[in-house]
Length: 168
Image (cartoon, rainbow, N blue to C red):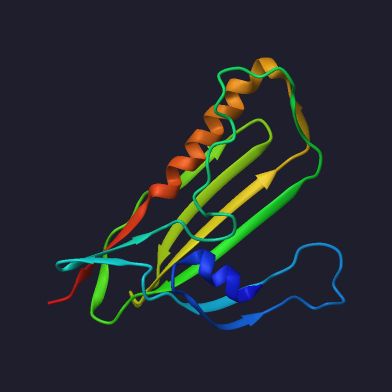
């Protein structure tokens, strides 16, 4: 399962190590840690290298399930949940961060999404933290446009990139 998750992160990624939660823990939050090598994750263009921020749990590109203009039935979220992903990307030797996207935040009737980035003080890594929170609720069909707009806003963040520069 962990190797499959590594492959979903990036083509050609290989699992180096992983930590699973205590098997006795059956209630509440859990932490799953993966360490992997992803040689094809970033693309080099001259002295620049670009890395997608499409990282973390559930971040694979996915189609928008809310494409119809109208809806007949309400949208119902029954179970509250929070998914928090923290991804640390070690920069390749000889590269430094040139540019990063702004923080991202979107709120909808039954979900809230946020993403932030931080560069390590030594400049050797970039950490992305994303949080997706779902709350129980019912969105009537006449408020469908709000859910659709929220989801479109979240999907836009999947195309964000970090730009690295080769040091002289």
